[in-house]
Image (tube, rainbow, N blue to C red; front, top):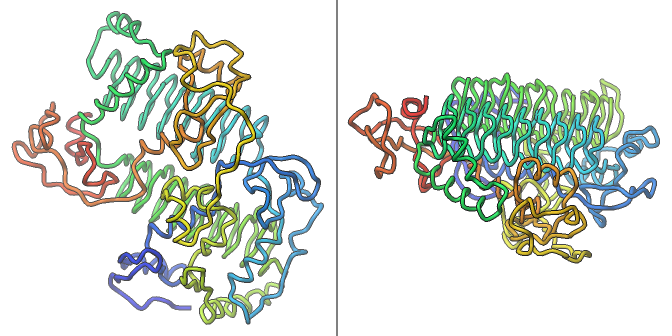
Length: 596
């Protein structure tokens, strides 16, 4: 089936947000290769729609619908889904093919798929090869972890989120970090050890409050350093003087740490920021990209990647578009969230698959399936009904033609033909349960206006026994009785605030070892605080802020010799720093002449 009718860029209007967007010629090349039509949603609306289908870290207590066993689940009671405890779901006690249904050419495809989606049992959590890590989801190869989500390979972690491959150990409160050990409150950092509070750092150790530092050790409150030691607030000290100054820093005090945080944030605004964190890469736009070639409008992507556009949290992916959390040498994938495979289209939660379309929760090398749910090691199925190879190959063109002839219309009047991802109203999750709320936050009224469901706050059946204002200021004054307290959250920083939290022994031991004060916010609010430190999944066109000898507005005086002196740098770029942001943003050349 041929869809290409344009050889040049095409401007079109998003049917969700009504904003104009452009489909480029190389986009059409990809769509032609995948044999799919161009999208009718803009990039951001496509991203938001897929994120609605992933609840990464909101857990509920409920019973297994097969055994009655108590369990944790990403699906709350009262949803129209049958939910099995993970081990039972993977057992031979039931067969997903028993739910197969004939394709009905008198009903839209997505209407039929919705019926199947609500019938086929779902696994309570996504866990593989994990030991002593029950409070976790979308995880592989964990050991002794608590409240860890979206991580592959880690040990002794608490409250960590969002790395395709993590490899972290003995750390807490991490966000999208890799091979980090003995560290706390890090964001987008790699290979660090004993770093407490840091962002965009690489191979740093024995330090506090670092931003955009590489190969640094024994530093406190520093920005943009390279191969440095014994610096405090970007000022060089001798080893002996550094130790004396550090002894004056009381990192175990909550009030003192608030002062350090404030000073650190002020220092960050006085130093240049690179327009994008892109390293060891060629012809890439986006942010947080490592070792990639021809990656366009991608974010948080690393390791052996080539020819992708519109992606987020990718690793080892080639020849793809519109992908979220895809990894493990995936190729030729389009509109996929939470999976890996070859030639996978319009699907979610598909692992190790090939030639798969419009399917969900299918594992163990499924191939040639269309509109399926919950399959394992199965081929040639449509809506979970088994076909012969010949029957399947004959049916698929008919199904695609039917999807175009009888499109699905959602509650807001948006139409879905072949080539669009699942309508958001088919998601098993409410908007504020999903990752969409983290990256495209909405209030209840706006979410419902857009056609999303909203989960009302549950009445909590616990009594707060310790208000955050009543906690001792210093970690040295905390005894083990704190483990019995229910601590109130200091602030509702997010739509997913739990209002209170408890300390676990592993956590308390870590704070004591690192001389850190107890947190005053629940884990969800802390997670959202880290999210606010990251730039959005969006790019703006911007000019370099270097004016030759200083930055625009004279906030920063250049220390290096710039090729554009004494004139304003004329370099322009795409950056995730919005034009109205307060940061000083330099192009790669000007930035390198300052920090390299």
